[in-house]
Length: 322
Image 1 (spheres, helix red, strand yellow):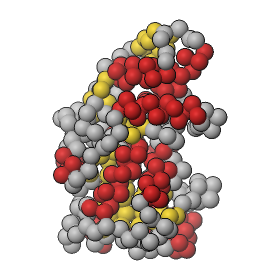
Image 2 (tube, rainbow, N blue to C red):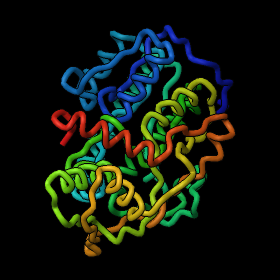
Image 3 (cartoon, helix red, strand yellow):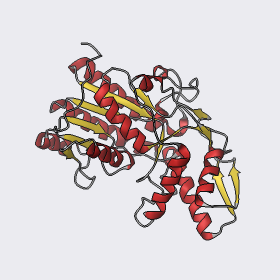
Image 4 (cartoon, rainbow, N blue to C red):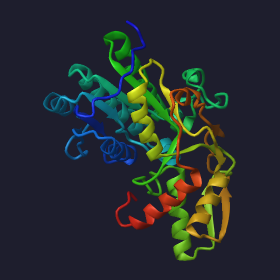
């Protein structure tokens, strides 16, 4: 069975299931699909459909019969959560993925996009990281359980292509941020954590902010609305066996990111770095040559994106995930 097929634009009138449509990624994807003219979007909250429940997932697919699926549902968290709740991240993500992908296979889903994470790559991968570096070295220990689950999802998609000829693909985004993010102290990723920390320090006139690590690791950040744009672009234009990196191709130190956030919230106090806390991978920059060759580039600059995220956070302070 061939691993490559001819891509064609999606039918905007076909039923389209967005798994995880209330999360950071899923909500942005939903907005993008609506604006692109998709008229039969399907979404279920976790209270309505527990994706860890295999029977419930199969019943949903049998009832709704989606033609297209984006699997954006996942248990996610920052370095503290990933290194503390390893079993939870491994078990829950594996169950979500296996249930959705098996049900999609059983009920004839034509096009499916599985979303992973750049943490799938080896801790010491050459920079920038090419898609082909997957499974060539040891993972970062602070998030290896989550990474293994995502790697399993990539291979599940590739196996469905090879064994059953399914026109399914995977995308690996870099670090994401934007409206709808998780801003909780223990469950958030680095950029929303910084937004909350500096905004609270500014509003409370706290003279000192202490951040984890040395501040020297370099990270690439992609606005979630750019990811949503990339997802639709890939579904309309790409149908190959390899997963595809999605990012900006540019990175910054955590110190630089913290400074941008502090500037945006108006914080003028001191920042110190707790070097007793782990840094994680020192650099994680994606090679985005493949998606650029497919004709897609991000449009939201980092400072612009941070500004809009701070604004959204302040406008929704009573309702954000904290």
